[in-house]
Length: 273
Image (cartoon, rainbow, N blue to C red; front, side, top):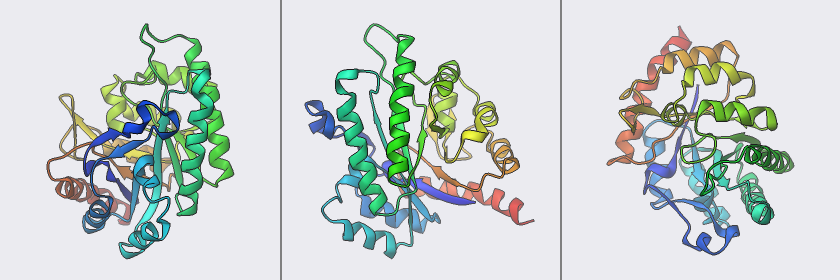
């Protein structure tokens, strides 16, 4: 079992302020220290990490510094997370160019996965044509990922036009992109993550684990997600990829990472038996 952790817990999730007036600069950001995050992630027992596009691009002109950090902590850059509206033709080219710049740099520093969220919800509601537009845009993302030897996956997310299970079922036939199930977002959107993983297991190359209870995202084992069932489905499908634990915010980020890592040891023992 290859385990990574998202750096976004260190500082919480924000967006780059330049993105308000410039689509090409509209990155996700964790408003904390990447250096501290990588140190804590290693000490909590993980061997990989995922990072937001904005935090990754902060190292664009100091690549050696990032590579040294990764080497010092013996960490693999599992993936970078990015996103877009994807349904508005007038800005799609800018969104795609932004994602390509992220993918190019991610590839330079050894990333494996390109994870994207998005699909805007219009002020007056979702149009059925939005799913076709989103599928078309995601196919462009796949082409970019392939160009830079990355694996592209779509991440359903609350607040997008693909948060409910029936919305995901509309999208998936319209695109060739892989699925990165975020187990807590799926449940919060009204779905059953066990059923989603079982249904789309052949299109899953990367997974996000996050626990959930009473409307709150939690460290693994503190909610009611059925991780044992999910892992069993993945193992039966011979899944040998990374599982990245994610937690948008936690009072003590390192402690949250340690709680989840401790919880996952039970599945490693089963695998070794």
